[in-house]
Image 1 (tube, rainbow, N blue to C red):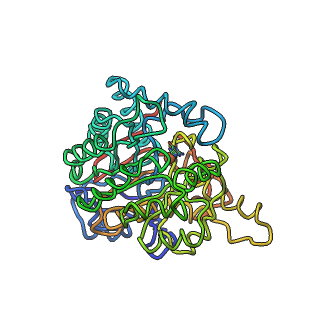
Image 2 (image 1 turned 120 degrees about the horizontal axis):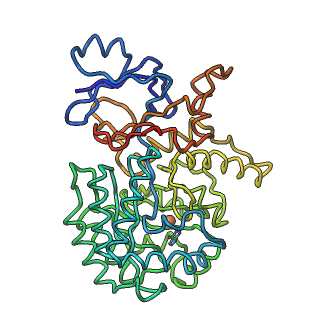
Image 3 (image 1 turned 90 degrees about the vertical axis):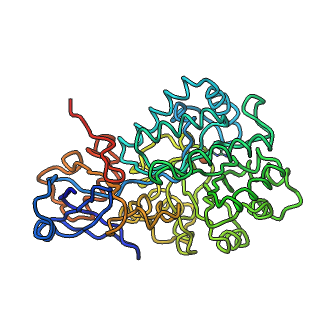
Length: 432
Ligand code: GUN
Ligand code: FE
């Protein structure tokens, strides 16, 4: 067992953050949180246990990235143009490189290492369309110690030949990968069926994906309603359907284990379909701006009762930092107000954005019983943020919410000094 003491920030199930200034977590050898509360109580009840004490630091639940593309990492911040052109110009050629195992290995290691350095402990990942590269990504995540839901990106048309395979091959590969990896690493690794989007999956592939998800009880992730040109493209491809969401509905892809990225331009019927099937949303504000896709009505979607997490969507988004994504979520909710004068909604503040980046992400991935805050019984996924990096010592803004605001708005790349998953340290900052 071990005691970690410092300023705890604990997202509450009912919303909001709880602050425990002289707080402590007690973590079992199995990596579970057995106690959360004041340091005084921890020291009274748990004696002769090693303690790690952190001054001028906050201890937060690990950050959750609910939507990200591993093979696109090298293109982060690169390129111009909107979604469909950007995919063709920059992304498909890059994803094709994952046929090379050595390249796939180097990229996977770098990707997970950099995510942990930025305080991400859980990720929902799209791999390339290669079975072997997906296996390599799982091996890398396993060795890194991260918590990952991940799958091979499935496509059977409308992309270069070298990253396509038949519907049957896509499904057989996915089933084989799921058998090998779903539940591995003491449950840290899970398999997610990953049809890229309706624009690169045939009706047969969509139908088979829905069937396998139902029979095997697997997760699904895909893209929905991201960019106006994409909406036109999907409407042309699927004229028999009333909406983009209806396409996924018809093929059985709307489940409570489905997470839809973007979901910007939804009609009220589409929202009702998603709600009726308990689908979650990965909100990707950084990407939505980088690719000029649009501004999602985050406040409205939260009021509608959706489970929403944040997604970096690298390389649509330019950074793996989920603190940066939290800042973008707050700023993009203000942008929505700017472009909808007269219909303003309360903007998302930094505390809410941090809630979305932690417990919100956990809920969106259906992992709220395992991670997301410090309730006793959950697994110990947490990060230590060094406030020396953020708050000047003589700052006149010393309230906890000021600290969180600085943490989110600073999105400082070196603020995380330690990252822990399932009670095990997976990253520690080394000072030069
Ligand atoms: N829609 C289909 N594929 C992609 C992708 O790789 N990134 C984003 N942002 N949207 C997509
Ligand atoms: Fe994406």
